[in-house]
Length: 525
Image 1: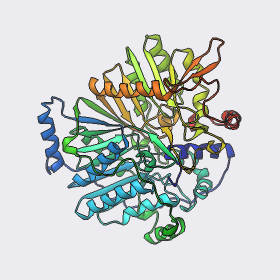
Image 2: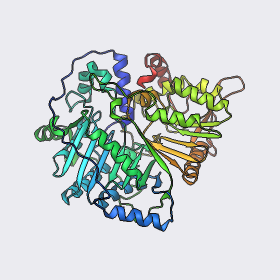
Image 3: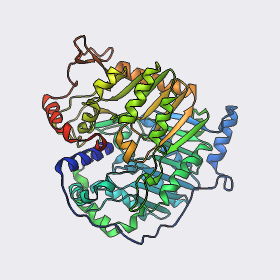
């Protein structure tokens, strides 16, 4: 992938900005911006083919619950479901993302979106502005496709040709700029939609030659999608959302394209992929029909000047803390960036005091796409183990100094590096939560997030089985040795020996992070 992975880039940026203690002015954002208000399709007034399919699927399943869900674990399911929604849409497509990378998988998907717009589908694309630099800024060209509207959330000032230039130009506005819209939604005709951990890009769909994310989404159908659409509308119609045309002209984009795109003849040939890009057959999708609720942060979590921020108790993380407080038997957690603040540590301690078994799968130092963020987790490991939390760290390849602030995504030919990106909770074997949030202070305090809470023993069992397998066969089990030192127990069947330092990482990297760690506060990691 030509750019660094999305989540790691933000953490690198915040860490560098904090450590460098820079101070620079930044260009102001446009004023008096015209933002025409629009809302999701009224499904009762304008029935579509998707609405008919959902009704037929529910009747065939003799379901009592009105909404259906399907976990999307494999890259092909995740990509194929989105492509199928684009092909099936007759009225509207709404896309909300933290990052859309300008690479092969996104290009194929966005070409299909443009084709949908040409056949009369109203398209709205809402993108957080943090990653719209260099090649990735070319995605903004979708705003100039007829019947497509595109807005950028919480724009970052500075030149789009250079990530470094934007960084230096925005430090003076650090408090606002480091708060990001982390939500992920892909909704068709207000009747089917996808949410979860994935952004749009090769690394999220198993197509990167260097690094690929292990991730999870959920395909939702029925009335719950209206809740997802209402959340989208609240962001779309918010003053923090700027139409692309107010930030960049078509001519400026063309000049940027000439500057950042390589010559066609020099572009490297991509190898064959393990899966094709055919759309999923939505009419044959295996939905589980179950009660559900959506948690979504309000746009006001990122305050405008003079605004009050979203209040405590109203956020997605607050909702998850409430779920944890009600857990009675077992709590399974996947959080790729796991930097628990005081509220989370108290929730884990209270659960353990009630006799709840708590297991957490997170990234190892080697699998973390932004190892500087790993120091926030590492300083809480011993306290978590002491309270009885079971910790597992995803196994990955060797990590060296080059990845201290995240990899560029370029490496020698060979097997790609695996990085954990799923955000999942399974509560007492009866409820599964899939969303965009991490259990860290960034998700709790700064970023906006979204999550689906689904009360289904079948889906909870499906998710738990996948997590159990990953913990057992693909992760290091962190424990204390007899003499009190940390020891990483090797994954079952791996043939590896136990480790006594962060596995698969270089001494130089570990020393560097030990030096930088005290300078990087948890809430910026």
